[in-house]
Length: 380
Image (cartoon, rainbow, N blue to C red; front, top):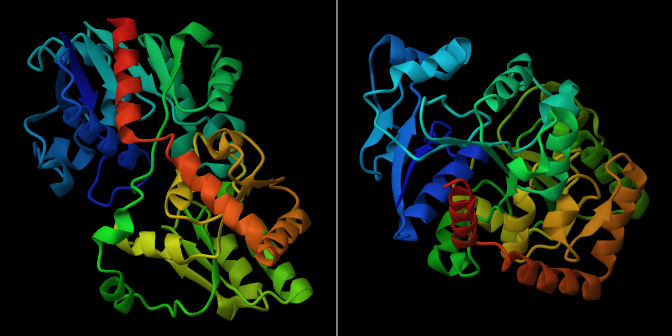
């Protein structure tokens, strides 16, 4: 019997990014009913909670029984380093401690697993805030007590070896999966949800979904959209869905300066059901990111039957396989041309939809849970 302590600090009520991965894996590990796994959950308090001695959970986590709070918030435990492990006696003994967000708490006993989702802060520091840049120091410190790293693509594994000097045998790859299954749209009231969205779905559109930040290469997408309108007389609008991240101002300036700014729409955080409708009704999903640790929106689009154009770099070809069109993220003209060609070719479009659905079938949270269990067993 493996006794595992799983850190869910990244999960907040408005789930996104790493928090979504963490929450989905929590549910999948519980649902798997693995007989050799005793699963326990913990989280670090926020600085505000810690100072006020509060232990409030996000509503989304209240479905899980007995989530323990670790002694210190991330900032304090990071400062204390390995010494933070001396304050965990009342938490209990565990065979494995799994840190899911670029950090693992330094318990005195037990094997430590740390997730590294990507190395943007090392490869592309110009795309990161000063806070995120501190991940480099934090991760290097954590490596001194980490027994295994989990990451999500061969390209990211190579980055970890090249940039952090970690030995290959200390890195374990698991997959990720879409929040949707193939029957999701049958489970929701599409007409009712559409009626509450301020967009005319009779107007065809191109879709982008992710945080609005420089790494996602949205400015190139807007420039490619402008070319498609001017050169190819594209009839579509462009919809950008995602919360504002770091340095979003130049992206919105690019929208304002576009001669087609009235046809570019930004929508912030949407419910899963609202987002699914935008995926399913899009003529194509475009994801020209400079760098991804996995590229989950690609899978989500494929699951819901939307053809994908994405970047030919980092993890994106691993995720998309033969089911996507790839383009150099630095080549705006090529991106515009791919958009135009896909819009012209219904046979290619249908082929990508079918290949995408088959590709998405390879990924499930059940598979992620089983792969994670293999990582645990590797250390046990």
